[in-house]
Image (cartoon, rainbow, N blue to C red; front, side, top):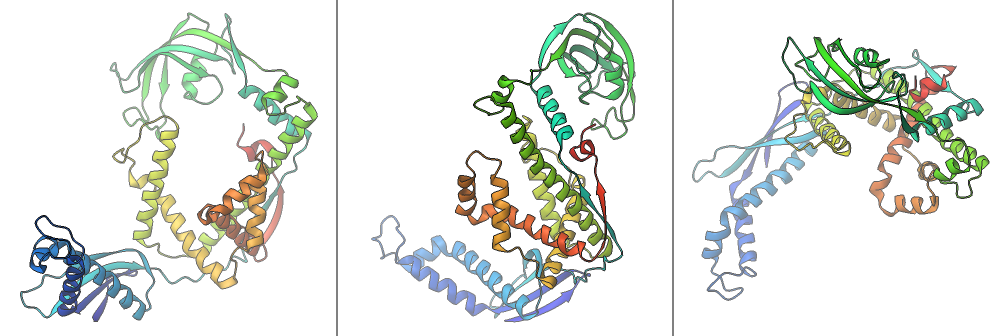
Length: 435
């Protein structure tokens, strides 16, 4: 085998390889002979099919398999000899062969991982967020749970925040309809943020049976490009207004939350335990994001385009799955422009490369006991924690997300020992994303 390496750019390489054509021919002949012993063909007894007939029927397929295997094997040997770390998948191209040529040639174009020197974060400041879950936080959470279980009863008064309104509407843009400009019997809860602010403000205060016309300006980044940044005229009729009726904090509520005997003390204790786990996870996420950003700011590398493209496709698949869970049909052909995911994909790939180098430098791989503890913590929120733990360990691939989280925790712990750290007590509603 002969191999010649070309540098096309900072990360892109082209490897030209030549192999003896006789090696390919010999392997094709060997496989065809092996196939002739087992192949079944009409008119011949098993194992008695002439090699010429086998070659006629299966020769092109076998040669294609042999060529593919030869390229994969020789490419692997060549990059090992050159001490290259290949990023993504190589693009193979066969070099046209002349009849009777003594060599089989191909080229492989690919990217390599960049050299990484993790930047110094000793000058970065990382906030260590803290929050204690007390009675006030617990009461707020119970109130939200009550609202989630609200029953709505029709009223004849004007609509106010928290009410569920049923409306018929028609919108026009310069006198013409536009996609999604009309609807009948549509329901929305005022204050939930599902409606545009101008639209919600206009129908707040309307009574059942009342009709009103008003203008609504769409945000410049609105998903409907036909109306983004433009002002439309709407005519809206409110057909019904329903006020929320929250469940009492009693045994019935406790039972609906899984407390069999309806004991309110047990209910509060269970909600608090779940809330503490959620708060812990959000605090960990806040701190991790700061560390990752500090590493990105301190370390400048070029992300291999091939890896970014793979990550974009993974994010697109995840977005389609999320749409499907929301009841929106999304197929492989559903347009999800790659540029929507470009920045996120580049960030993920860059971080992955930096973390890989950091873990190798400082031996930050997660330990088995650390992973076990995280699995047990995650299992605590289930009715039978021990069964959940067994489920995780029944298949190694189920532990990957846990192992990744443990690795990130180790990176965060390392960073807190290097960077400047300040403690900050967070507001509960801010941490939970509530207004």
